[in-house]
Image 1 (cartoon, rainbow, N blue to C red):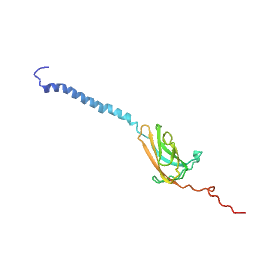
Image 2 (image 1 turned 30 degrees about the vertical axis):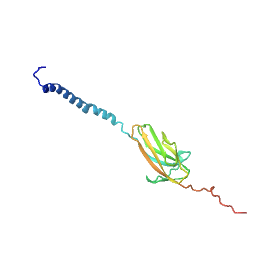
Image 3 (image 1 turned 45 degrees about the vertical axis):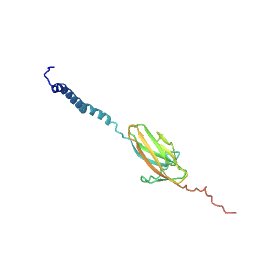
Image 4 (image 1 turned 45 degrees about the horizontal axis):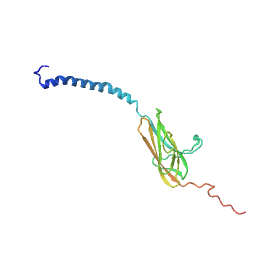
Length: 171
C-alpha cells in the first residue's frame, strides 16, 4: 500500500467491495429467496371456520333428535329447569387439522366441560331461573382461536299429567 494515500482513500478502497457485496446480498434475498419463503407459507392459510352452534334435545338416535328452533343470534334459547340439551358445533375443516373445543357455562353444567376434542357437549340447566351464557372456543391447529357464545334462558318446567293428578269423584 503506498504511503501517500489518505485515510479516506484507504477506507473507500475497502468499503466499496463491502457495499457492493451488501447490495448484491440484499438483492439476492429480496428478489430470489424471500419470494420462495412467502410462497411456501402461503399454503398454510387457515381454511377452518365455525359454521354453526346448535342446541338439540337429547335422543338415543341422533337422526331423531328434535332440533330446537334456532333464534337470531343474541336471543336466548329456552330450556326448562334441570333439563338436558346437546350443544353441537359444526365446523368446516377441509384440511382435517386437529381441533380442540373448550366449553364453558356460567351456571349450568357441561359434559365435557373444559377442553376436549369433542364437538358436542351435553348441557344440564341449573335449578334456578336465569340467563346462562354458554361459550365454546375452537382452536384448529395452525389457525387463530375462534369463539362463539349463546344464551340459554332457564325457564320453569312444564307440569306433566303425573305431577298434578286430577281428583277422582267418590262413588
